Image (cartoon, rainbow, N blue to C red; front, side, top):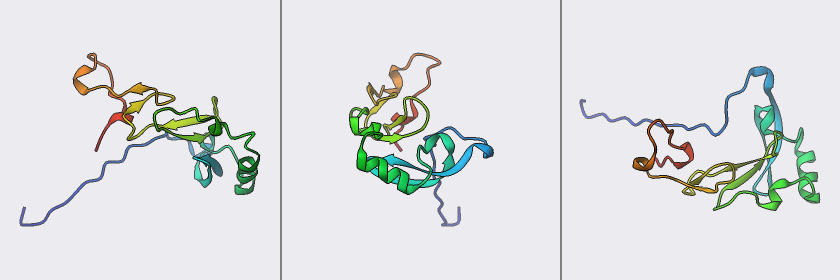
Length: 121
């Protein structure tokens, strides 16, 4: 190819897409800090940064302070039950609470999907 090179980037989504009428600006608690952005309503428990920071001060509404994620997974508050989501990427574990050890590709039963949290790029 005449000396030029190119690279590609693979993005792996952590959340399911949502309809436009299900999007909003909001805030959530990510590992003890408020994160505000625009996205799916179900991802943001608080409408404003102040509301999020007030929850952090009281800690009563911060379900992540109970550390539900195992094996180094990071916790994010969301509105849908159980009101938190664990992100397991890069931990070697997967599952709702990062409690399942990532399998080796040759250990999967035929027709079983490889957990996206276990993909190493």
